[in-house]
Length: 393
Image 1 (cartoon, helix red, strand yellow):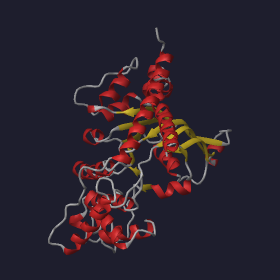
Image 2 (cartoon, rainbow, N blue to C red; image 1 turned 30 degrees about the vertical axis):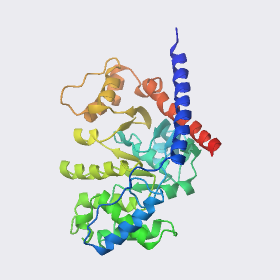
Image 3 (cartoon, helix red, strand yellow; image 1 turned 90 degrees about the horizontal axis):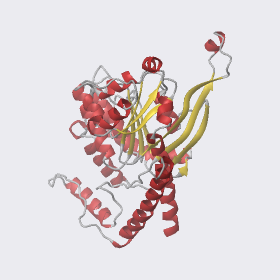
Image 4 (cartoon, rainbow, N blue to C red; image 1 turned 90 degrees about the vertical axis):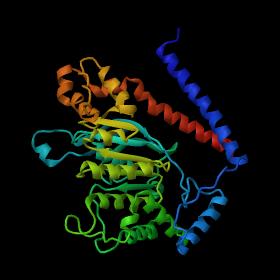
């Protein structure tokens, strides 16, 4: 009979074999097959300017350089991090209270993987370290001490290169109040797109991004000052997303995109986020305590507890059934009631108070689960896939 260890290696070998076969046929298909149809934008035929843009896009499509009708191609990238720890110097206030350590640890042995075309929710109570983790992965932490490995599609992360393929949407939407929505996007495109992108292509790409994030009706509206005039909070949030998208990133981080929004506004923003993910980009969002509808919009969850430790990383499933089954399988965890918000229930049953009551450590339970092996297996497959591509090419 096979043991659990035997089955693990059998699965790894099977995934490796599948990766070899898939990439072989993928390379053959790219080499010998041609697209069945051409992707074209839907525009107003009465607009002479748009006709010229469509003509240029069609010519670009015929060269096979586009994906899903996007003018500027991008390379889908995965982000894998392994045993990441983050420390800062111990605050003087804590030392004055008798703490003897020189460093304060904010992230503790965190591992995971974020994939292209997958919308991941980074969730945790206040102080869990979700924004800290996202800032570390994005390279926004210039102080402190970082340990562990971070790789981009199998290659060690280089911050200078990574900055060109990633975007970051701040929680606070900071824009110039005296320009229009269209001018904000064009300004970002001029600053952040490569210098070899000509003006017509740049304008066409901005138009596509505006359509993707549904900013067309307010393209000529002044951004204005928040809470005074101009755009609403929800509209400003979509402008923030669009400003990052016109840089054509492969990986996008969003810090609480639905914070401070009502249900309707949050749904509109999440639709824009979902449209972004559907282009094949890797999108990671920190979310504090989402509603049922917002939570259902995500594909995967990365859950952290106070102290900077991961306690769940994996798919949510329909109606979050995979998440619910995982926590309900832990002895002593109360079952979720019908109609209750899985996100709220998840934070309640995984709190420090419940840990103390049950005498368990959810981080340790997760580290010994099959879910913990998931990102490691994915990282192995990505590495072998890139080795195979290099060998074939």
